[in-house]
Amino acid sequence: MPLLPPTQQAQLIVYAQTSALEKMGSISVNVRGSSDDADRAIQQKADSYGARYYTITLKQEHELSNMWTSRAVLYR
Image 1: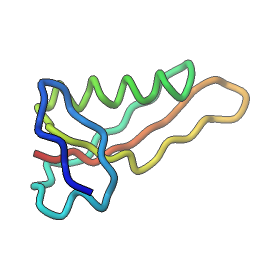
Image 2: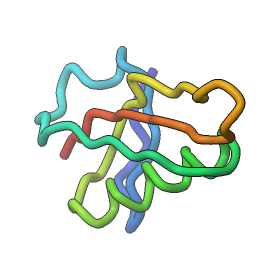
Image 3: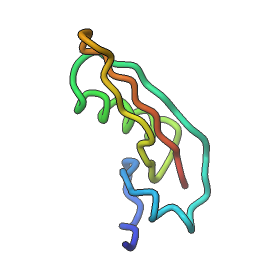
Image 4: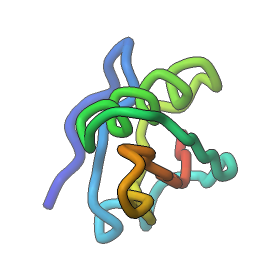
């Protein structure tokens, strides 16, 4: 699966697309809300680090609290 050209915002990609990219590091967020809120928080943090692409490696809801933890690997 080919990569889309970089944009001003970091783009979510699948792991199979990372082979030609340089890994920048990892990030994590904890947010109250929904799965979509966790996705937005990861993208915003990836943007703030200057990443062009990222893969989500974990997204989990904490039982009965509406709290989400999400982790991602950033690439340029």
